[in-house]
Structure formats: C-alpha cells, structure tokens
Length: 177
Image (cartoon, rainbow, N blue to C red; front, side):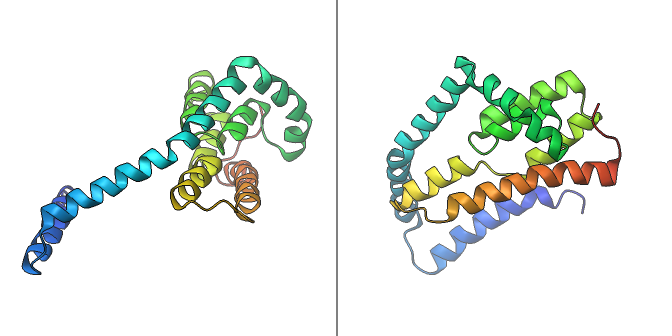
C-alpha cells in the first residue's frame, strides 16, 4: 500500500488510452496532433521567454540588482524582511531559475535551519513567478491586455513575502540575525 503513488500515472495513462480505444478514437493521431499544437504554442511564447531571461541576466550582471537591493533595504527593515532576502524577493516574481540560484546561495551561506533559510524556504513556496506566468499564459492565448492581472499578482507576491516572515516568526520562532 505504501507504493500506490508509483502506479497512479501509469494507471491513469493506460486508462486514458483504453478509454480512447474503446470509444473508437485513433489515439495515436490525436496524440500527434496535440503534440504539434503544443510545439506551435512553444514557438509562439519563446520570444517572450527569451526577452525575460535576457532582462534578468542583464539586471544581475550589470550590478543594478545590488543597487536596487541597497535602495530597498530601509523598506525591507521596516517590514521585518532580512536584507539578505531582498534579491530573492525581487527576482522570484520574474524568474524561477534565477530565484532558485539565489535561494541555493542563501541556503549555502545561512543554512536551511537558520531564520533566513527558513524565511527564504517559505518565500519560495508561497510566491509565484508572476512575470513568467503572465508572459507564458497571455503569450499563448495572444491576449495583450493583462488588465488587473499584473497588479493583483504582484500584490499577492508582496503579501507572500511579508507573510513568510510572519509565519516563520510565529510558527518556528527566531528573528533577524
């Protein structure tokens, strides 16, 4: 019973194929058609993703990220956010891979069981790569007017950052070093 999870995907996969065959559907043709549409979607959104990755790279390499972090440190101190986590808070909404690199650096420097490591861990789990997600979904659907999506998503990210500090302090104790 402990390894039931290992069988869920194969059973689901076989169930879908079996259902399609029983319904008289040419499963292989439908699969190939769907894969082709997926590849077309990937080609459509690729320019947005390349631009996003380039912007993040330029921000980090140019030193602009350090300047922005220094400028935001008084705000972070007011909110109780450790200043070591500002780069993570800035890049998490933009790029998951850049945020993961910063997160790994934080864990190597401060250790996972430290206050900073715990807050960083909760931040990674409670926030989203907002710009990536908007670029991906709106780019795939060719929607150009994002309306209130960006404002709402960034507000949710900010609340997630602040709530991460509060949750770690409340449930795990500790505080700024």
